[in-house]
Image (cartoon, rainbow, N blue to C red; front, side, top):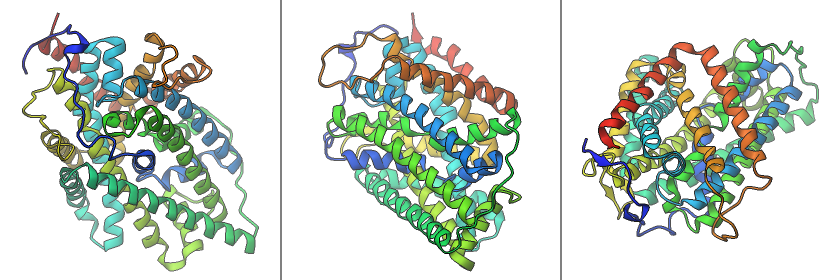
Length: 445
């Protein structure tokens, strides 16, 4: 990598503006990106895990409401930052503005080697598990199918941002329709037979609460990636806040409704998360339940992979503009709105991870680091002076309460990760820490 000066006036940083900006992600397209990325492989298993861990629908709804409120607080902070700095890169840009280029570089290093390929691999493996169930393929083909999904959606992304935007809109609409079908069937069953099995309330020990809290956080993960696409969003000052806040509210409603449907159609005492989902689906859809639910999950994964493949390379493009990544390797095709080299790198690293780890191992590998930088970037709201009376900037209400609530969640999550998954957390942290000495090679001063 080439050496660059660490201090450079912002006016000298290349300011790329997509020639198709304002024509790709409008309010619904931006909201669809959040729904497409967030509601993925855990669309049923995450609510099921919470129901089994907590034991009662009341506790599950309280946790969903608490997590939604804290996530909404984080979205308020990110909406303010995204409208202040509507440039490609999202979190990378906010960290650079608030804490300097070295901190931003370490985040980009983590994104390239840990978070983005880890999330892509996890989605590929999770989607493959359900796709082979639908197609009747032997389980030994799971890794091959996962890599096929990763490569396939990488190629789809290279067709251009318009194609990816269409996929996200279609899959988001399909997810909403599927949730409506699932919840509607459960409600009709409850009308015909209102008796539902009531679970015994378990003592709320840390061993019971921690998995449920982590599962709830996973369920909301990814809403912040819309900030990476700021340059491809129509009228950022209006669209970004509406999409972030509306997307979080829509996702919260989806998970609450699915939790209610699971308790109506299933049994909270089922032996596993998969058993609870299967039981509920069998009661609602009969013998075709497994295929119907698997098709819903495959559709959800398709939208998530499309959103991740499209948004992730924007970080590397922003770093290439600043001279922190090789510009030739990360060339941005302005006509199609894609970074060919960055997309291929992401797909390659994700395929390697899919060969090396299981779904849960990969989650433990990348999520703790992602959570840490999410909290640090949101703290930029406190570190940077807030603009006054600028109509282009969304100002989070009740400042600084939203960011303080959000940082409490981040600290609690990191403690839970360290206690519950120390090995995977340590491996991910070690790879991220290597980015610091590398930054002294890349950045002088």
